[in-house]
Image (cartoon, rainbow, N blue to C red):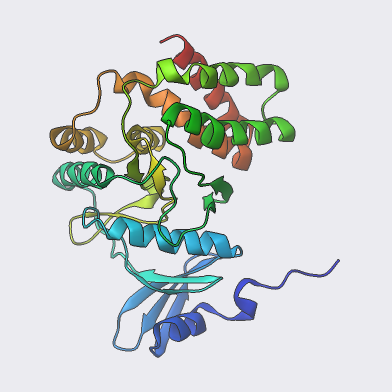
Length: 293
């Protein structure tokens, strides 16, 4: 078996940053196996991320630019990217506050309101075969949210989980039933929102400037309640204040809290595929609860 070459052909983050920004580098510090802080000449600090899949890098860069182009939420600027490297602003760390959370809620509502061409629409320049975290995610456009959500966000990961043995075949039927009943469970029809797409707490940073910043998007057109459901699933500081700001700017449809579990099926099944049985059990519980509403 031939060994797989390292992403970037063995190039390090400092060299990649210098090449992609056209500026000399004066220092670098690893943050993880795929992430490093690099100091450019003049003192600016950037984050340099390495990716094995060119589609993932391209999708993230396109997603950041798509979100930034709305002028609503704060996202790190993209300074350059290629098939294996992405260079963005560093976000200086701060602490969450209730005031910042209310502001972020309003900003998130404004982002969603900008909209998208279709459910599943990828950002301009982004690939159809994208990623959410380490899992493949297909951005195939659709006009009807219930059928699109079932076909492209729930069932692909359910099938993978069953194939892997993470969800037993006999258990899968409860999630299939939810998909069949989505037209009646989904609530009032809404147009496609511009989503961050992977809005868990780790992708929401609280900056030293007192504002919330969004990183690592899996951006696409979707239902706005999906972003909010993910914030509920994985926790968010001052979540009640985030929702206060959101509702002030763009009130959610009646019964939206009853639909949180429905929208969590997608991230839970992604996590079941990536991380195992515990998330599968949560997905099954969410499906059973949705059917009793």
